[in-house]
Image (cartoon, rainbow, N blue to C red; front, side, top):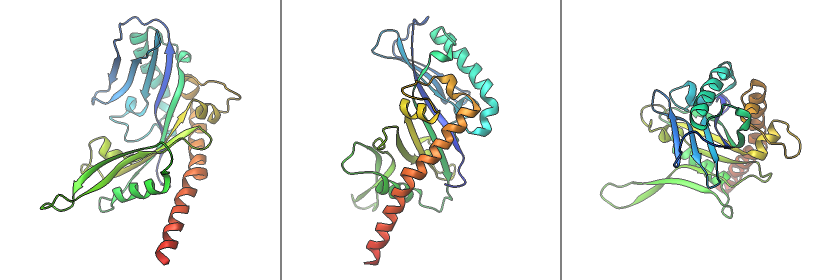
Length: 255
């Protein structure tokens, strides 16, 4: 995915305090194209809410492409939109109150329609999923013979267990299929690392158990650090597993 643009996607935070509106369970904000870009969920804790912001959907029709360094020129606009919505929903526009719980960083790769993108996803699943770890596969079945009931499983995407450092999980899936754009655009595969609070703080260089808030992320310098961390983690953890799988597969086929 050397030519893929790396960007930030959804960031989930927690905020506590009184809310001017009665939130039964969830309040959503959508862009002009109907795509979700902000949601506020009531938690089981009193006056505590989860806030999720899909950064690219604030400036684009969808999150097909992540919020990259090239988009950082629009940070002030993003901040203004978020402040306006949170003031309306929660009665506060103090972004420093929003403590980061997790952050998604991804790279997307569009492949020619003649390429079997599902085979790529299956290869990645075999290389990265471990049989003894807690992980998730999203699949669907298709008939391979119309006159029979024989079916095959297609892996739409998967999520690995947390990495050995306890900072992130890897998600790999067909983004075009998730957005219901299959056969409308070229197959698009996404490799996403979902960093928890520990992973975000470490990427930003916070010492000890320093927490990160939304204002820590919405800066060009911070985005650069986060994207660099993504690249380092892919090189250190994801690529070696893929190379090892391919070496094993090659050795097996030779025998």
